[in-house]
Image: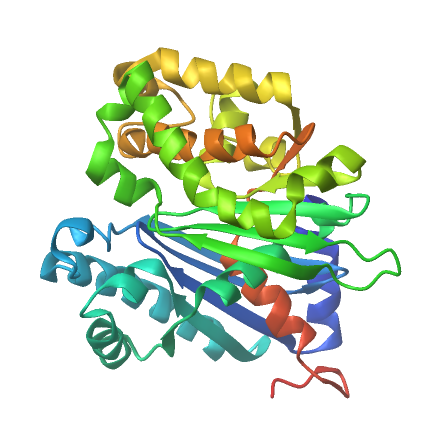
Length: 354
């Protein structure tokens, strides 16, 4: 994806208005914890953001215990999806824009739940959105798509991870020097995320012994992937970059940068060396629950997810000792928009929305 400046390029937006109806694209990502929407129009190498929405819906609340999505959680999610549907309908009806091309996806909570397909059918009927469950491979591909501009900074390979609410996606990526898009070599979807871990062992993570135990458990899940792809050997040869996209790593970046409030423009694309990563992890653990809830980059509504996410990240960080981490505040919504835009065929005065 393009830099922050190209994402927020007002001049490009003006040019589209002068040239006629703008092509508009939308992406909705319903995860285990959040419902997010992004609407944008092409701008240079990336896109100009027209509208965005994000709300904590806790769709996966209680899923670890029951194996099902609860009625309360499903209603919370549908309420947020209805907001997204209404906002995308307004963009579709805007006389200054072209037809809206939209994709809406659901991820791990709906993959795991016994009633996941039933919920999707209900949500489609109640909202009119074309909601669909995607598989782990496509989830990894969309994360790679969203971070392509960061991945291209690697010499030969990139290791991307996305710590979600219900799962953690790992993508091992080949960087093509000929300008072609990054290529997914292998991927791994771990059935642990910040929501599932917070329900299983949130309090455990506040002790040194408990945190280390969670790290060891996650590392054990990662080792078969390492055995297949020999990522450690590639790291020793050089030219491997680590890219992290999740609330966990953006929070740690905010802690490391000593921000008085979270600012995406200062976090997205920032580089952290191993010493900075370890210092941020140590500070997060030292703050404890009360300190984390008061931190300006975290807050009370996210505090229970911070240390479980840090434990997942610590396992990745310890197993694969890559010198540099690039932090990405971008994800599946951005990946969907980039893919939709790339797949549209140009026609007279803009793009055709097939």
